[in-house]
Image (cartoon, rainbow, N blue to C red):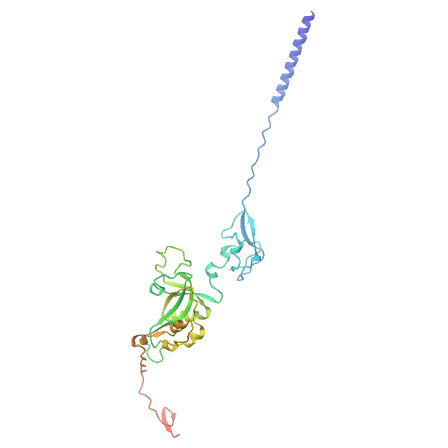
Length: 308
């Protein structure tokens, strides 16, 4: 009897344990499993160095170094700079506000920066023969000669050009551009093909002389060694204002003697006749005026001689 009771108690205990386990399993199934946390990968935001103005940069004034600084921006504007040294001493075309990126379009062109103060960039007409066979390059130094031809229709003492002549106009002039090329790069086989203009850096005081020579005559560029520093001094230029015999200037002993001779020039008459003076062409008109001794008085279109 006792053994039977123990068996019932054990069976009841097992049933109770089974029920508890069932309830525990059911309670676990009621709870929704929490999703695993998602780790977000943060991508660092891109930043670009950009040169901006630290203050108002007025138009026409060279930019000082303390007027610029480099900041990091999420984007790089078109034409912006990343190095402040590339902007220093450039000239703004219009005012640039403070904290505003400095752009290439806001600055004067690089070509204009090549013109030194006191100089002007001037284009002259050239061809293959007058430009050393198109071997002139930007950055070269040249001497500028010009040729004036006498116009057969303008003979007489009042003619502007009384005889054909060639002379040196400017010495050691720097070439800024040759044709459409402003730098020495490019295919040598194609460089200079079809070139009709050259841009020269000319002192402002000589621009009018060069323009007159280019429009009224023919300009020739003579290439020179960059180590040759001889130039035609203004004082020597004043001595050769007209076409003269170069032999009269020989013997001064200075290094620019050849330039003085070239500036003196040579006329076609001197070149062809060995320096024989050209005969003066008589001016058409009435009969020569007879020389009358004493004082002449003209009254009502009639000339009368008066005693001394």
